[in-house]
Length: 310
Image 1 (cartoon, rainbow, N blue to C red):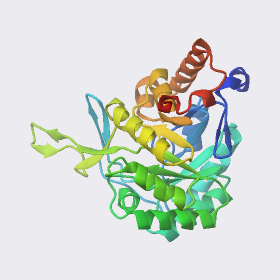
Image 2: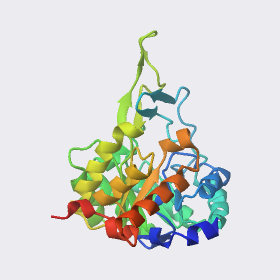
Image 3: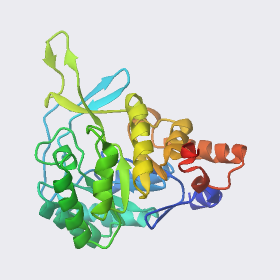
Image 4: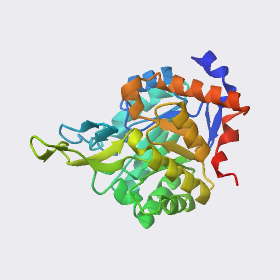
């Protein structure tokens, strides 16, 4: 696995101080509740991993059904189930031995909770934090924070004061201007922006005439949201100077390159794993490498934001 990474130096990227062997990252919410599942993703070729969102205390999440497949992706409303940071610290320590950066996604119901979870995660060995301020289906956290500039700034400042590791902020597309929200996060001290989380959606069963998900609404992921996510990355790149991690509907190398051209320095992959399996990371990375070679570029860095040239 190490030898495979060393052959593709052109794919190395720096992400707010984190050194990635390639620009593919496991998105939060997918196979990130245990070190064992993260190990499978690393073996599949991911340059870094993001855990599922972890809170201060254990949380059961919603009753089934929590996921529904559509013709263009998945809608999920898991309810942020997790074991709590005290228990999850063991998984972080184990994941640290896998040789890639471990980014812990954290959530809370107050700025103080975000800070407390982040500190415990760093104490366990986390290389960076990703603040989930964009979950579309849990009240009093997630998007309710990310859509409120004052609250978002408070959360970012509290976490930055609590840890000395990079702090990424994962934003919601369910806002009037994501670039303005990104600017708020940047001014509060964020080290990078992840764009985007899922889009609020729902599905109804014609036979029962009832919403399918137990929570009624959830977050849409997959190919349907890619054009929205690309637009968001493009707009953020023109507004703030922070590194951007593009996320939303990436299923192949062309999708990943599109995000890079829009301004992302790295890409997160989630829903595609359910279809292609963990080796999707290697497939996408090889495709990016071939693209760079065919176009005469020496590194990923050379194409980041290339679509903005006048």
